[in-house]
Image (tube, rainbow, N blue to C red; front, side, top):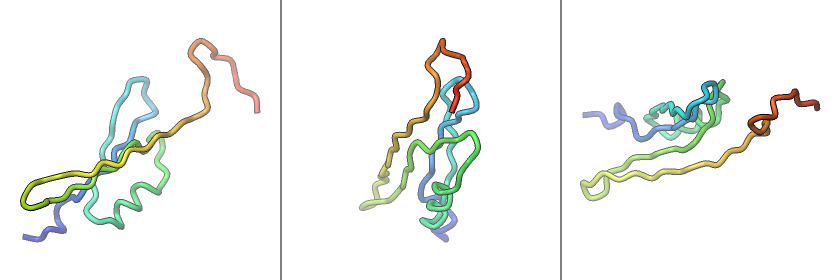
Length: 84
């Protein structure tokens, strides 16, 4: 059984193109793939966390790396155009 054929983790993105909270997960099989997934810009997606899986003494475990991001926007009710 080839262990490299299984995902070792997933990148979790928040969708920004819809009004409700929604996650989109993208699995990765190598650290190189993880770096590529997390460093490429993605339309309407913001990276929320990365989860890396492992087996320790035959027990599954995971490391979750969470990220905080902020955007400049308008407060609800203030729908006037923003001037630069």
